[in-house]
Length: 93
Image (cartoon, rainbow, N blue to C red):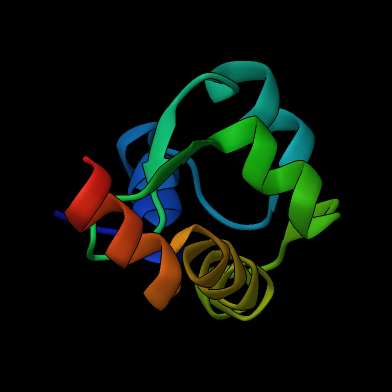
C-alpha cells in the first residue's frame, strides 16, 4: 500500500487529475480521505496533512514529494512512542 506523498499522488491519479493541483481542490474533494503516512500504518486525514504542510498547490509529483515528505516523516516520528511508552504498554497494557 502506498504511504506518505505516494498515497497523496495516488489520490490525484485516481481522480484523473494532472499537475499542477491545488491543495484547495484536494481538500474540497477528499478532505476526509485517510492517508497512510508511514509504513507502520499511521494515518491522518488528507485535510489535516495539507493544513500541517501549509501548502497551496503542487506543481508536479516531485513538488508534492518535496512538500509532503518532511511532514509525513515528522508526523510519523511524533506518533512513535519512546522507550518509556513502549515499556508502559508492555507491562501495563
